[in-house]
Image 1 (cartoon, protein in one colour):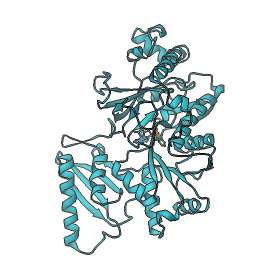
Image 2 (spheres, rainbow, N blue to C red):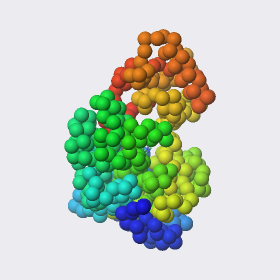
Image 3 (cartoon, rainbow, N blue to C red):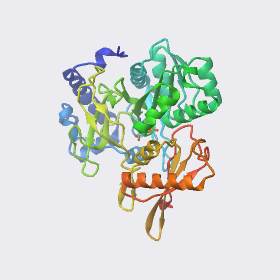
Image 4 (cartoon, rainbow, N blue to C red):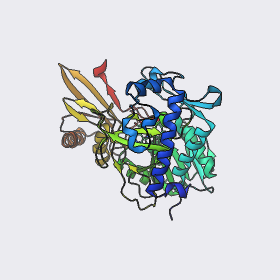
Length: 433
Ligand code: DLL
């Protein structure tokens, strides 16, 4: 039976969701107009006042906000409440330029924890469960978000953070963890390590995993589910909109319900900004309608996505987003061809390789080069040159038919690609140097 954390909200009829959105959006627009001079200026530049936004229908009139704006406002320029009302900050892991700082009042933390509690409950979590939170704690939102959600559900929370793989596995066994929360790449690594330790899925009590913070394919889901003997659920979010829990998967495991009582989602054409209808692929844009301290309006995520209002067998009525298909900014253009790292991952996993790989892009004589370094499993590792050549050939063919490009494939020894405890760094683009 499907469980909900807040059934009245999660299964509310569409008219009710729209009524909440209309009320909260109009209030929020007034709130930022009154308290954030930066927003007020952007609205004035478009000739808008709060009276121009009476309902969700008017959302499209508002200006977009991007990471650029948030950097301009570093550190407190977007603050919409007095600093004394804030209780915490988090920050993005961005490696270039200034970090984005997100601030939270206690109300904002509660709302975020509720979103994560919905995700944990959708993954089957109850107060009987032991939740091992192996996302990083600290400025990153993964640890804090799932930790808060786990408390709300009443689970026993193990705030182990990422890393120290042997201890992770020991705790999982000794404390009988039933739900694991971490990045999908770390989940795959934990599965791989357990296998090496001779552990089979029935020797660990895990039943579900809540994995997100980076792109992962359906093939990777299958492989994690098999090695860990669990159901693997996707969870999505970004620091700018609170953190994880903006959207989460239910038992249907085919798309993530967006918590529409807190966030309004739009899909836009990334080039023109035009709002696109359901089913069309474009850039995902969020408006946070009841956050107090950091209430983003029409924030461009750069994630490429599709929305669907199709009824879901789980009974939830909130709109679903597909797994992000890439980012407008991590999409690689190689010899004029658009390449998403997730497409490369699909080819590798389809041919039985683990999700340990690196994509290296370069430029020689004004021509782009693409190399994919792929780690073999211990079983694949062999002295036979003929076998390795044959494996390489099949990968090159697979990549050519998926991408329409010829890539150089290097098969490397097991464990030779550095493991990540957080988000995996898959792409090295030397062209920018
Ligand atoms: O990654 C928040 C999070 C923590 C989500 C834990 C899920 C679990 P940021 O570090 O700000 O926040 O990165 C946000 O990560 O715009 C997406 O590009 C990507 N991302 C997040 N979740 C997913 C997912 C956290 N489930 C950026 N699938 C987003 C694909 C994801 N990409």
